[in-house]
Amino acid sequence: MTDHAMERIDLLIVGGGINGAGIARDAAGRGLSVLLVEQDDLASHTSSSSTKLIHGGLRYLEYGEFRLVREALIERERLLNMAPHIIWPLSFVLPQTQSPRPAWMVRLGLFLYDHLGGREKLPGTRTVSLERSALGDGLSPRKGKAFVYSDCWVEDSRLVVLNAIDAAERGATIATRTRLIDAQREGDGWVATIEAAGRTRTVRARALVNAAGPWVADVIGRTHGARRDRGVRLVKGSHIVVPRLYEGDHAFMLQNDDRRIVFAIPYEGKFTLVGTTDEPWTDAPAKAQIGAAETSYLLDTVNRYFARKTGEADIVWSYAGIRPLYDDHSANASAVTRDYVLDLDTGADGEERAPMLNIFGGKITTYRKLAEHAMRELARFFPAAGEAWTAGAALPGGDIADADFEAFLRELATRQPDLPPALLRRLARAYGTRVDAVIGLGDLGPDLGGGLHTAEVDYLVKTEWARTVEDILYRRSKLGLHVPSGTPERLAAYLAEQGIA
Ligand SMILES: Cc1cc2nc3c(=O)[nH]c(=O)nc-3n(C[C@H](O)[C@H](O)[C@H](O)COP(=O)(O)OP(=O)(O)OC[C@H]3O[C@@H](n4cnc5c(N)ncnc54)[C@H](O)[C@@H]3O)c2cc1C
Image (spheres, helix red, strand yellow):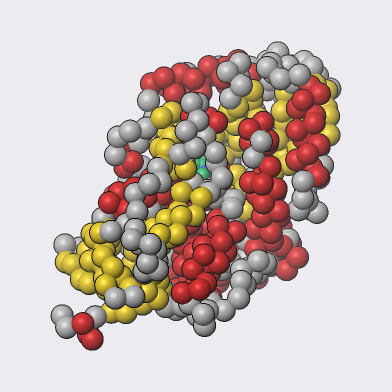
């Protein structure tokens, strides 16, 4: 291909996790031309393997991460208002009975948490007696007191997809199953080779954003002349899903003797999600899966707290993710900073050359601020780019009046009286105000199992880059935990019929 025929863009973003998708949205909204390449599906790695909390991170106060906690607390309610269909408040019960920390210390942490900033809708901390409160149901021994505080839940992989949809609607190209092979500086830009379905092509970009998460160092290695002085620390965290351990919509924050905490969170109606662990990881990120010691650690924790005893045979699902943390040389994996570091590389030779922005660390919670900071770093290379705009700008489907999801659902139910309430709730949660794009035509098509109709599959393929059974059953939804046997096969056959998988 001759140079003038080569595809030219402002920003080439490598990585379709939350950070890549968030930056793509922000940049496209400022008028930049953006190509995002993701080697697998959107959110197929760390960004679908989190604990799924939009939180300040109470635990990080112990490590003095006040900047991060304050920024995350402010983002918490902002994101809740931007996407109230996939983000909702969650209260946490923190029993003090088996705490390695004195009550005054926990109370002080919660006081800071309540007052560091950004709390308008969520209630402040209160104290309950576990014997007397229904919040103690299911615990054994059920005694002593607990603190109750609030954070938010997020459907993590859907948050990524919503950012990608918005980016695309603002002009970005989102190329899934497309890998960056290599890139080099040429003139004032980058020439990059990307590969999709076994075919390579070359694109020219003014700037390169490395949002490859656990592959951040691998991508640096694929770029000629990039600086290599920043390190990433890979730390694995795993979760198990077990049948519901207790009644109620609240979560528990369980303290362990090693000072780590484990969450038990209501999950998908009939389950409890339990996690997480912190284990150094040196193997390929894609190979991450839960290890035997992690499983025992999580089971021992819940068995120390809950009356209902849980064994390995009860585990219905597990997943593991790799945190791509910035290497601050901490001795302990739990103590490595969760804050993000943006490393702008403009060439090793001291000259101002084509920029590459490497992203280390971060949280789902802080992705929007991270994207703003990334754009600030790149601003001088794009003088015509617009101002910051994403604070408060609803994500697709999130423009729900007063961010009141239940009122929105009630109104939807009056418009769709024939749909089963559980199906309507699930679809409203998934698609928010865009639900009509799935159910609007009235005919949902055949049910492939568990309420997954072909109209929804068509929507996911057309609008959300879904290609495989796993994309649909485990990332665009968690229907994989619910559908009857035979559904994955029927879905695979349907996708094949459409010429997709
Ligand atoms: C166990 C665990 C629990 C967590 N819990 C929380 C939580 O409750 N709340 C919270 O806020 N945060 C949480 N986090 C942190 C959060 O999940 C991560 O910070 C975030 O998901 C990182 O996103 P990312 O976009 O950087 O990485 P990723 O989601 O991994 O995305 C990077 C993408 O880059 C792609 N890629 C890599 N190389 C290439 C290439 N050459 N070409 C094309 N694509 C490439 C990969 O396929 C990948 O999809 C948790 C993390 C873990 C591991």
